[in-house]
Length: 167
Ligand SMILES: Nc1ncnc2c1ncn2[C@@H]1O[C@H](COP(=O)(O)OP(=O)(O)O)[C@@H](O)[C@H]1O
Ligand SMILES: [Mg+2]
Image (cartoon, rainbow, N blue to C red; front, side):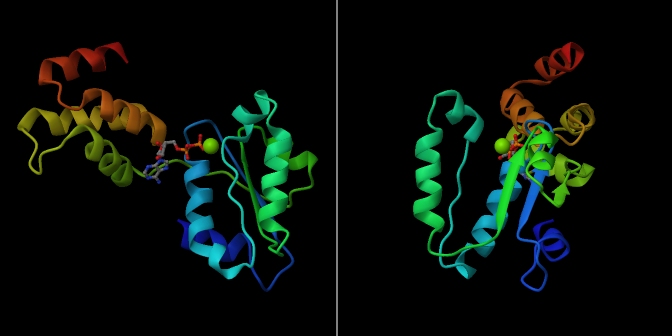
């Protein structure tokens, strides 16, 4: 996904150096931004990854965030990626490129859920079918897959069924 995103949005050959990633909580915005950050930050003299801005601004820590950003990027980086649940934040700041992730495809959703929920290489019979139902319920939302997977890990079939009934 990162490989497909970068050339079409940010590039060294065009003038686009800022982009936004927008969508509901748990969609994987921060994960995507950090994947881009770790893959490309070596290309810049300075780089900074500032996480949890919403939570930290609620604690009046914006001044420290600003200081961290300036300290780390003054060396001369250019690309800026902002993730937010609120598209207005991006539009109001003149962001030309906005990316809205779709969530995970079925295959990847299944792998993520099973990596958390099913520890064995060959899960017992009934679990696979129930897994599909949970994955369908999560609609590709990574946070839901991780949370439900961790919740169901180590529980027996009856517990899975009753959890599904409550969803
Ligand atoms: N592509 C992915 N593959 C595996 N796990 C993912 C993926 N995207 C997100 N996650 C997991 O889903 C959860 C929510 O992701 P996060 O990036 O924090 O969402 P957001 O920033 O949109 O609120 C995290 O536990 C993260 O590790
Ligand atoms: Mg986030």
